[in-house]
Image 1 (cartoon, rainbow, N blue to C red):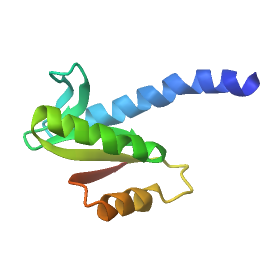
Image 2: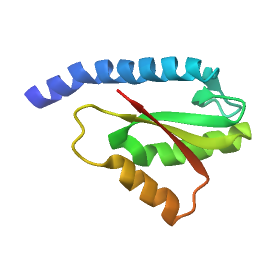
Image 3: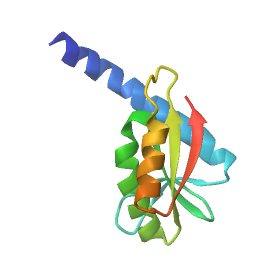
Length: 114
């Protein structure tokens, strides 16, 4: 029960931090933050060239599908804003890069630190 409580208490903080990082980064790219698509989904950042999914490093697997969906629905290029956490011990960026290269996925990766 203590683990569940800790998860519930920490989750909104992590979610808020991800949104804050994305919001600042998107503004620096002159993007449209949380753009609503024709499908009713929200692109984290839409620029003149890219539909960008912002995601923490450990959730890189989810970012692939979302970025491709956003690209299709907006007619933009797929991109991921990869948010590298300070406490990450694993090289998630290499895992993401391997998957993109192995399947020749048309995804641009932008990297920012937490």
